[in-house]
Structures are given as C-alpha cells and as structure tokens.
Image 1 (cartoon, protein in one colour):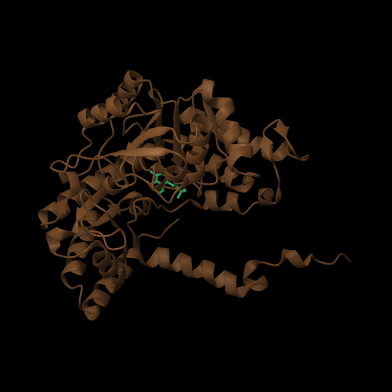
Image 2 (image 1 turned 60 degrees about the vertical axis):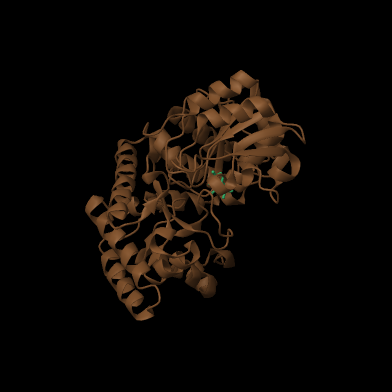
Length: 417
Ligand SMILES: Cc1ncc(COP(=O)(O)O)c(C=O)c1O
C-alpha cells in the first residue's frame, strides 16, 4: 500500500499553531471594519489560486524565454494575466511579475533613469509615497527627488506650481500618484507638462487603479511612459504589483525587473492576479467600484456634518483624509481609539502637518474593503457616527468596548468573502 506523503496533511493537523494564526486573522477581519484605504477582502477564488502548486515552480525569465525547464503550465498563467490586464487597460505592454508596488516602481526607475537624475514627484508629507523619493528609500538614495505639494488652502494639487517647478528643475522624470490624495489626478495636464520640459512621465496609480479600470477616475495610460499599480488595493487581487508601459520601454523595463530587481516570479500569485483581472473584466466590478466611490462620498458628507474637517473638503475617489485637529486629537490617538472600537484605520500625515510621522494630525479612511462586504450609503452613515463617537469617548475604554460590541454585531450581517 502506498504511504501518504507526510507533506499531504492539512495545515490544521500539520501545524496547529500556524493554522490558528490564519483563523485568528480571518476572525479579526470578520469581526471589525477594515477602513484602511489600501486594503481589501480578496475573493475565495483569488485566495485559492494563491494556494495552488504553482508556488513550487521556478520560472526566472518571461513566458517562452525561461531559465528553467517545465514552465509550460506557469507560462499559461502569466500569458493569461498579461492578456487580461491589457483588456482592462489599453497599454502596449504589461509586466505582471512585480512582487509588490515598491518593486514595480524600482524597476521603472532603474529602467528609465541614471543614478543621480533629477525627478519631480509628490511630497510624502502631501500624500506621496516612500518610493517617490523618501531619503531612506532606494528612490531617494539613488535619484535626486524634488517634491511638489498641494495648495495649503484647497488641499488640491496646484498644476501651475508643478509646471513652474518642472520648468525650473528640468527633471528627467515627473511622477504622479499618491498614497493619501482624496481627489482625482489630472494626468493629461501632467503629461503635457512632462512633454513641455522634455521629461519622462511615470504614474503610480497604486491607489485608484480599480477606479481607473472601471472608468471612474482619469486614465493615465494614454499620457504616461510607464504606469504601475498594486494589485491588492482597489483592484482587489492578491498582494503584488504590475507595470504597464509603452512599447519603446518594454525591453528595458522587463529586464530592469528581472534580472535587475527580482529573481524568480511568484507564479501562484501571478495566477491569482489573472483571477482578479478576470473578476475586474466582469460587469459586477463596475457596480462595485461605483459603490466604492459613492460610499467614500457619503462618508465625507457624513463626517463633515459631524464637524470633521477633511483635507480638500471631500473626495473624488475611494478615500477621505480627516484632519483630526478638528476634534482636538492626533492621528495616532484617533487610530488607537478607533482600533479599540473595532474600526481599523491608519494615522496619516496631512499637508503642512506639524506632527511627526509616528504621531500625525490625520487619519486616512477608505471604503474599498467595507464595500466588498456589501455596505452601502446608510451603513456608511453608521460608520461615520461610530468614528465620531469613538473619538469623543477616546479616554473611556468601557465606552469604546461598547461601540466595539455594536460593530461586532453589525459585522455578523456582512460576512467577508
Ligand atoms: C502610491 C503607492 N505606491 C506604491 C506602494 C507600494 O506598494 P507595496 O506596499 O506593494 O510595495 C503603495 C503602497 O501603499 C502606494 O500607496
């Protein structure tokens, strides 16, 4: 009789400690409300794809040109992911191998810039990302970044200031895209500025990619030399990144990613990307993204009615940025109070923030995950009331626990996928 392979035991039996961690995370996500703007709840199909045998396979290289044998099956996964994403976005080329958004960005810089080149990108303190020139990030170490910000009064990107800075600096590249900007970005103007000063134009649409896919946010693809995005935020796929680019940059970008930045691609994750891109091609994706945006707008309106100040006064996308000074609390303390009440958010710097990044004056609140659970405008009003109530009773753990119990009861009606 053949012996069962000892590696065939289910996780629960093989390693109860690790199994329990998985169960506990499921419980944490189920019993609270996920309001971190960069997170989402993946479908069961996406998670199943990630636990397939494709995790076993080395596939350095690209489909049809691998450094390993036996890639005929995983090639199908990568070809399918590329085909589907190019049906969603009208780019000339796609690379679906980046392990993350940061690595996608690294490959773009490495492909298109020389060390020391001047780059103009959004300031981190105004909503930009670490990979847009933070001094401790590879981007800030290897390239000379200058920041542009938002108008302190309006909270909006001032395109005239961007143009003036670009004329003065003559950057090799202009970067658009942000982690905490609640408004639509006008990529056409950015593209025009880049052309005027002879710069390359790169867009990091990590945050709004799902909205762009659903045509609810301006599309950067026609205007940019390269576009990156993360697959796990509004796109609702597995954790990872993707690069889109013009034909002329294809060779350089592919080889900057592999062998430049990464080794073997995560083929199980690429299969899961293909699954999520397939979901994004279905009609329910547009309904979902429409609701994400409606929910964010409703959240903004409800919070304003409750006396919160919002950076830019509202939102055009999936997130709102709350200026917590309007409730005399720091971002750090607001995050903690909301956590105790079962609402997960992150503290965030706001434009002109006098506080340090570990304290901040703001919190960023997003609707992608709660919309996946089926919440609509009326439930969003309730979330706004809980945010307000939790901040009001921040010093009273008993009252915070009471809100948490209400949130828990509510969550049972909206199971995660
Ligand atoms: C604008 C932007 N770019 C890049 C990234 C990096 O993505 P990852 O965490 O997958 O490296 C993020 C993540 O939050 C982001 O907001």
